Length: 332
Ligand code: AQP
Image (cartoon, rainbow, N blue to C red; front, side, top):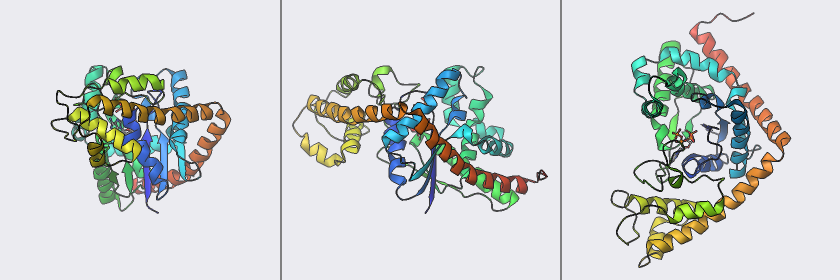
Protein backbone atom coordinates (compact mmCIF):
# COMPACT_ATOMS: atom_id res chain seq x y z
CA UNK A 1 0.00 0.00 0.00
CA UNK A 2 1.28 3.47 -0.78
CA UNK A 3 1.74 5.65 2.25
CA UNK A 4 0.16 9.02 3.06
CA UNK A 5 0.95 11.46 5.82
CA UNK A 6 -0.67 14.71 6.86
CA UNK A 7 -1.20 16.91 9.89
CA UNK A 8 -3.44 19.55 11.33
CA UNK A 9 -2.75 22.26 13.88
CA UNK A 10 -4.54 22.13 17.21
CA UNK A 11 -4.49 25.89 17.64
CA UNK A 12 -7.94 27.05 16.68
CA UNK A 13 -10.03 24.79 18.90
CA UNK A 14 -12.69 23.96 16.33
CA UNK A 15 -11.74 22.81 12.85
CA UNK A 16 -13.21 25.01 10.16
CA UNK A 17 -14.98 23.94 7.01
CA UNK A 18 -11.85 24.61 4.89
CA UNK A 19 -9.80 22.23 7.04
CA UNK A 20 -12.45 19.57 6.71
CA UNK A 21 -13.24 19.83 3.00
CA UNK A 22 -9.68 20.64 1.93
CA UNK A 23 -7.91 17.99 3.98
CA UNK A 24 -9.58 15.88 6.67
CA UNK A 25 -12.29 14.53 4.39
CA UNK A 26 -9.59 13.11 2.08
CA UNK A 27 -7.76 11.64 5.07
CA UNK A 28 -10.84 9.63 5.95
CA UNK A 29 -11.15 8.27 2.41
CA UNK A 30 -7.43 7.49 2.07
CA UNK A 31 -7.27 5.33 5.20
CA UNK A 32 -9.16 2.70 3.15
CA UNK A 33 -6.61 2.52 0.36
CA UNK A 34 -3.34 3.73 1.87
CA UNK A 35 -1.05 3.12 4.79
CA UNK A 36 -2.11 6.34 6.49
CA UNK A 37 -0.33 8.44 9.14
CA UNK A 38 -2.14 11.49 10.51
CA UNK A 39 -1.02 13.74 13.30
CA UNK A 40 -1.99 16.69 15.41
CA UNK A 41 0.93 19.06 14.86
CA UNK A 42 1.48 20.67 18.23
CA UNK A 43 5.11 21.53 17.41
CA UNK A 44 3.81 23.65 14.56
CA UNK A 45 1.26 25.25 16.86
CA UNK A 46 3.91 26.93 19.02
CA UNK A 47 5.30 28.88 16.07
CA UNK A 48 2.74 31.40 17.33
CA UNK A 49 2.35 32.08 21.08
CA UNK A 50 0.09 29.54 22.83
CA UNK A 51 -1.35 29.29 26.29
CA UNK A 52 0.00 25.95 27.65
CA UNK A 53 -3.25 24.72 29.20
CA UNK A 54 -5.18 25.65 26.06
CA UNK A 55 -2.66 23.98 23.81
CA UNK A 56 -3.00 20.75 25.77
CA UNK A 57 -6.79 20.76 25.69
CA UNK A 58 -6.87 21.83 22.03
CA UNK A 59 -4.58 18.93 21.15
CA UNK A 60 -7.07 16.47 22.62
CA UNK A 61 -9.88 18.39 20.97
CA UNK A 62 -8.19 18.12 17.56
CA UNK A 63 -7.76 14.36 17.99
CA UNK A 64 -11.41 14.03 19.06
CA UNK A 65 -12.52 15.93 15.95
CA UNK A 66 -10.41 13.74 13.69
CA UNK A 67 -12.05 10.65 15.15
CA UNK A 68 -15.47 12.29 14.90
CA UNK A 69 -14.78 13.06 11.24
CA UNK A 70 -14.26 9.35 10.62
CA UNK A 71 -10.63 8.45 11.22
CA UNK A 72 -10.48 4.94 12.54
CA UNK A 73 -7.45 4.02 14.67
CA UNK A 74 -7.72 0.46 13.32
CA UNK A 75 -7.29 1.76 9.79
CA UNK A 76 -4.78 4.56 10.25
CA UNK A 77 -2.08 5.73 12.63
CA UNK A 78 -3.25 8.78 14.56
CA UNK A 79 -0.76 10.50 16.83
CA UNK A 80 0.48 13.74 18.33
CA UNK A 81 3.60 15.19 16.73
CA UNK A 82 5.45 15.98 19.98
CA UNK A 83 5.09 12.32 21.06
CA UNK A 84 7.56 11.43 18.32
CA UNK A 85 10.79 13.35 19.02
CA UNK A 86 12.30 12.30 15.68
CA UNK A 87 10.34 15.11 13.98
CA UNK A 88 12.41 17.79 15.68
CA UNK A 89 15.59 15.79 15.19
CA UNK A 90 15.22 15.35 11.45
CA UNK A 91 14.06 18.95 11.14
CA UNK A 92 17.50 20.09 12.33
CA UNK A 93 19.23 18.21 9.53
CA UNK A 94 16.74 19.63 7.02
CA UNK A 95 17.30 23.15 8.38
CA UNK A 96 20.97 22.73 7.60
CA UNK A 97 20.22 21.71 4.00
CA UNK A 98 17.87 24.62 3.28
CA UNK A 99 19.05 27.92 1.89
CA UNK A 100 18.03 31.05 3.76
CA UNK A 101 16.75 32.55 0.52
CA UNK A 102 14.85 29.39 -0.27
CA UNK A 103 13.06 29.49 3.10
CA UNK A 104 12.39 33.21 2.67
CA UNK A 105 10.33 32.51 -0.44
CA UNK A 106 7.64 30.58 1.46
CA UNK A 107 4.46 32.60 0.99
CA UNK A 108 2.78 31.25 4.13
CA UNK A 109 5.62 32.70 6.19
CA UNK A 110 5.34 36.02 4.41
CA UNK A 111 1.58 36.17 5.06
CA UNK A 112 1.71 35.01 8.67
CA UNK A 113 4.73 37.11 9.65
CA UNK A 114 3.23 40.18 8.00
CA UNK A 115 0.13 39.72 10.16
CA UNK A 116 2.27 39.51 13.29
CA UNK A 117 4.81 42.13 12.37
CA UNK A 118 7.98 40.70 10.80
CA UNK A 119 10.21 41.74 13.71
CA UNK A 120 8.05 39.90 16.20
CA UNK A 121 7.55 36.72 14.18
CA UNK A 122 9.49 33.80 15.65
CA UNK A 123 12.33 31.98 13.94
CA UNK A 124 10.15 28.90 14.47
CA UNK A 125 7.53 30.39 12.18
CA UNK A 126 10.26 30.97 9.60
CA UNK A 127 11.51 27.38 9.70
CA UNK A 128 8.12 25.74 10.12
CA UNK A 129 7.95 24.57 6.49
CA UNK A 130 11.23 22.74 7.13
CA UNK A 131 9.74 20.95 10.13
CA UNK A 132 6.95 19.98 7.78
CA UNK A 133 9.55 18.57 5.38
CA UNK A 134 10.86 16.40 8.22
CA UNK A 135 7.31 15.33 9.15
CA UNK A 136 6.74 13.98 5.66
CA UNK A 137 10.15 12.48 4.94
CA UNK A 138 10.34 10.58 8.24
CA UNK A 139 7.46 8.37 7.07
CA UNK A 140 8.65 8.08 3.47
CA UNK A 141 5.17 9.18 2.46
CA UNK A 142 4.27 8.82 -1.21
CA UNK A 143 1.46 11.36 -1.06
CA UNK A 144 0.47 14.23 1.19
CA UNK A 145 -3.24 15.12 1.29
CA UNK A 146 -3.51 18.87 1.94
CA UNK A 147 -5.23 22.04 0.74
CA UNK A 148 -3.80 24.27 -2.00
CA UNK A 149 -2.13 26.59 0.54
CA UNK A 150 0.34 23.80 1.35
CA UNK A 151 1.48 23.09 -2.21
CA UNK A 152 4.62 25.20 -1.93
CA UNK A 153 5.68 23.32 1.21
CA UNK A 154 5.32 19.98 -0.56
CA UNK A 155 7.48 21.36 -3.37
CA UNK A 156 10.11 22.28 -0.79
CA UNK A 157 9.85 18.75 0.63
CA UNK A 158 10.48 17.29 -2.80
CA UNK A 159 13.49 19.55 -3.35
CA UNK A 160 15.02 18.68 0.01
CA UNK A 161 14.41 14.94 -0.39
CA UNK A 162 16.19 15.06 -3.74
CA UNK A 163 18.98 17.21 -2.32
CA UNK A 164 19.56 14.85 0.60
CA UNK A 165 19.40 11.77 -1.64
CA UNK A 166 21.79 13.37 -4.13
CA UNK A 167 24.30 14.33 -1.48
CA UNK A 168 24.15 11.35 0.87
CA UNK A 169 22.63 8.50 -1.15
CA UNK A 170 19.06 7.32 -1.68
CA UNK A 171 17.31 7.72 1.68
CA UNK A 172 13.99 9.50 1.31
CA UNK A 173 10.91 8.99 -0.84
CA UNK A 174 10.08 12.06 -2.93
CA UNK A 175 6.42 12.74 -2.08
CA UNK A 176 3.65 14.12 -4.29
CA UNK A 177 0.92 16.50 -3.17
CA UNK A 178 -2.56 15.00 -3.05
CA UNK A 179 -4.78 18.01 -3.65
CA UNK A 180 -8.32 17.57 -4.94
CA UNK A 181 -9.11 20.31 -7.44
CA UNK A 182 -12.71 20.84 -6.34
CA UNK A 183 -11.98 21.39 -2.67
CA UNK A 184 -8.36 22.59 -2.78
CA UNK A 185 -9.42 26.01 -1.58
CA UNK A 186 -12.62 26.79 0.30
CA UNK A 187 -13.28 30.51 0.43
CA UNK A 188 -14.37 32.90 3.15
CA UNK A 189 -18.16 33.30 3.11
CA UNK A 190 -17.95 37.07 3.47
CA UNK A 191 -15.01 37.60 1.11
CA UNK A 192 -14.84 34.86 -1.51
CA UNK A 193 -11.56 36.23 -2.84
CA UNK A 194 -9.65 34.94 0.21
CA UNK A 195 -9.40 31.42 1.61
CA UNK A 196 -11.43 30.52 4.65
CA UNK A 197 -8.88 30.66 7.45
CA UNK A 198 -8.86 30.88 11.21
CA UNK A 199 -6.55 33.86 11.24
CA UNK A 200 -7.61 35.91 8.21
CA UNK A 201 -11.37 35.32 8.09
CA UNK A 202 -13.91 37.48 9.87
CA UNK A 203 -16.12 35.48 12.27
CA UNK A 204 -19.03 35.67 9.82
CA UNK A 205 -16.92 34.36 6.96
CA UNK A 206 -15.56 31.37 8.88
CA UNK A 207 -17.56 28.20 9.53
CA UNK A 208 -16.29 26.51 12.67
CA UNK A 209 -17.58 22.96 12.77
CA UNK A 210 -18.13 23.04 16.53
CA UNK A 211 -20.19 26.23 16.56
CA UNK A 212 -23.88 26.18 17.40
CA UNK A 213 -25.57 24.70 14.30
CA UNK A 214 -28.01 27.63 14.24
CA UNK A 215 -25.15 30.12 14.11
CA UNK A 216 -23.67 28.16 11.21
CA UNK A 217 -26.99 28.21 9.36
CA UNK A 218 -27.12 31.96 9.82
CA UNK A 219 -23.64 32.42 8.38
CA UNK A 220 -24.57 30.40 5.30
CA UNK A 221 -27.69 32.48 4.81
CA UNK A 222 -25.76 35.72 4.99
CA UNK A 223 -22.93 34.60 2.68
CA UNK A 224 -21.82 37.24 0.18
CA UNK A 225 -22.83 36.42 -3.40
CA UNK A 226 -23.25 38.81 -6.34
CA UNK A 227 -25.83 41.10 -7.89
CA UNK A 228 -27.09 38.60 -10.47
CA UNK A 229 -29.73 36.00 -9.67
CA UNK A 230 -28.59 33.00 -11.70
CA UNK A 231 -27.06 30.02 -9.91
CA UNK A 232 -24.09 29.02 -12.02
CA UNK A 233 -20.60 27.68 -11.23
CA UNK A 234 -18.20 30.36 -12.45
CA UNK A 235 -15.29 30.97 -10.12
CA UNK A 236 -14.13 34.07 -11.95
CA UNK A 237 -17.37 36.01 -12.13
CA UNK A 238 -19.36 34.36 -9.35
CA UNK A 239 -16.87 33.32 -6.65
CA UNK A 240 -19.41 33.45 -3.80
CA UNK A 241 -22.01 31.25 -5.50
CA UNK A 242 -19.30 28.91 -6.81
CA UNK A 243 -17.96 28.46 -3.27
CA UNK A 244 -21.45 27.64 -1.97
CA UNK A 245 -21.97 25.17 -4.82
CA UNK A 246 -18.64 23.48 -4.04
CA UNK A 247 -19.55 23.12 -0.37
CA UNK A 248 -23.05 21.88 -1.17
CA UNK A 249 -21.81 19.44 -3.79
CA UNK A 250 -19.08 17.95 -1.60
CA UNK A 251 -21.21 17.55 1.51
CA UNK A 252 -24.08 15.89 -0.36
CA UNK A 253 -22.26 14.06 -3.15
CA UNK A 254 -24.44 15.84 -5.75
CA UNK A 255 -22.68 17.00 -8.93
CA UNK A 256 -22.37 20.74 -9.54
CA UNK A 257 -24.26 20.50 -12.86
CA UNK A 258 -27.07 18.68 -11.12
CA UNK A 259 -27.23 21.45 -8.54
CA UNK A 260 -27.29 24.12 -11.26
CA UNK A 261 -30.25 22.32 -12.81
CA UNK A 262 -32.00 21.88 -9.49
CA UNK A 263 -31.80 25.61 -8.80
CA UNK A 264 -32.50 26.84 -12.33
CA UNK A 265 -35.00 29.68 -12.06
CA UNK A 266 -34.74 29.78 -8.27
CA UNK A 267 -33.15 32.56 -6.28
CA UNK A 268 -30.04 32.62 -4.12
CA UNK A 269 -32.27 32.46 -1.06
CA UNK A 270 -33.46 28.94 -1.95
CA UNK A 271 -29.89 27.71 -2.42
CA UNK A 272 -28.75 29.22 0.85
CA UNK A 273 -31.71 27.87 2.83
CA UNK A 274 -31.08 24.34 1.55
CA UNK A 275 -27.33 24.56 2.08
CA UNK A 276 -27.90 25.86 5.61
CA UNK A 277 -29.91 22.70 6.28
CA UNK A 278 -27.20 20.49 4.75
CA UNK A 279 -24.64 22.18 7.00
CA UNK A 280 -26.77 21.72 10.12
CA UNK A 281 -27.22 18.03 9.27
CA UNK A 282 -23.48 17.71 8.91
CA UNK A 283 -22.28 19.61 11.98
CA UNK A 284 -24.86 18.35 14.47
CA UNK A 285 -23.65 14.71 14.61
CA UNK A 286 -20.05 15.88 14.22
CA UNK A 287 -20.37 17.96 17.38
CA UNK A 288 -21.98 15.09 19.25
CA UNK A 289 -19.34 12.58 18.26
CA UNK A 290 -16.54 15.00 19.18
CA UNK A 291 -18.09 15.47 22.60
CA UNK A 292 -18.32 11.70 23.11
CA UNK A 293 -14.58 11.32 22.51
CA UNK A 294 -13.84 14.26 24.82
CA UNK A 295 -15.96 12.71 27.54
CA UNK A 296 -13.68 9.69 27.57
CA UNK A 297 -10.15 11.12 27.72
CA UNK A 298 -8.63 7.80 28.78
CA UNK A 299 -9.71 6.10 25.58
CA UNK A 300 -8.60 9.10 23.57
CA UNK A 301 -5.17 9.15 25.21
CA UNK A 302 -4.74 5.44 24.72
CA UNK A 303 -5.54 5.76 20.99
CA UNK A 304 -2.91 8.49 20.78
CA UNK A 305 -0.38 6.44 22.75
CA UNK A 306 -0.77 3.46 20.43
CA UNK A 307 -0.55 5.77 17.43
CA UNK A 308 2.66 7.33 18.72
CA UNK A 309 4.19 3.91 19.26
CA UNK A 310 3.44 2.86 15.68
CA UNK A 311 4.61 6.18 14.28
CA UNK A 312 7.80 6.10 16.30
CA UNK A 313 8.80 2.70 15.03
CA UNK A 314 8.78 4.06 11.47
CA UNK A 315 10.26 7.46 12.31
CA UNK A 316 13.12 6.08 14.41
CA UNK A 317 14.26 3.80 11.63
CA UNK A 318 14.30 6.57 9.05
CA UNK A 319 16.06 8.97 11.41
CA UNK A 320 18.76 6.48 12.28
CA UNK A 321 19.44 5.94 8.59
CA UNK A 322 19.58 9.70 8.01
CA UNK A 323 21.96 10.18 10.99
CA UNK A 324 24.21 7.49 9.60
CA UNK A 325 24.22 8.98 6.09
CA UNK A 326 25.02 12.45 7.40
CA UNK A 327 28.01 11.05 9.26
CA UNK A 328 27.00 11.26 12.91
CA UNK A 329 29.02 8.90 15.08
CA UNK A 330 26.71 6.21 16.46
CA UNK A 331 26.16 6.42 20.21
CA UNK A 332 27.47 3.28 21.93
N1 AQP B 1 -9.73 27.34 3.15
C1 AQP B 1 -9.18 26.14 2.98
N2 AQP B 1 -9.51 25.38 1.92
C2 AQP B 1 -8.97 24.15 1.74
N3 AQP B 1 -8.08 23.61 2.60
C3 AQP B 1 -7.73 24.33 3.68
N4 AQP B 1 -6.89 24.08 4.72
C4 AQP B 1 -6.89 25.14 5.55
N5 AQP B 1 -7.71 26.10 5.09
C5 AQP B 1 -8.25 25.62 3.93
C6 AQP B 1 -6.14 22.83 4.88
O1 AQP B 1 -6.39 22.34 6.18
C7 AQP B 1 -5.26 21.55 6.59
C8 AQP B 1 -4.88 21.90 8.01
O2 AQP B 1 -4.33 23.19 8.00
P1 AQP B 1 -3.64 23.86 9.21
O3 AQP B 1 -3.16 22.88 10.18
O4 AQP B 1 -2.72 24.91 8.66
O5 AQP B 1 -4.89 24.48 9.85
P2 AQP B 1 -5.16 25.91 10.16
O6 AQP B 1 -3.89 26.51 10.66
O7 AQP B 1 -6.36 25.88 11.01
O8 AQP B 1 -5.52 26.48 8.72
P3 AQP B 1 -5.78 27.96 8.44
O9 AQP B 1 -7.09 28.37 8.88
O10 AQP B 1 -5.44 28.16 7.00
O11 AQP B 1 -4.72 28.67 9.36
P4 AQP B 1 -4.05 30.03 9.17
O12 AQP B 1 -5.14 31.05 9.23
O13 AQP B 1 -3.14 30.09 10.35
O14 AQP B 1 -3.36 30.00 7.86
C9 AQP B 1 -4.15 21.83 5.59
O15 AQP B 1 -3.99 20.73 4.72
C10 AQP B 1 -4.65 23.03 4.84
O16 AQP B 1 -4.18 23.05 3.51
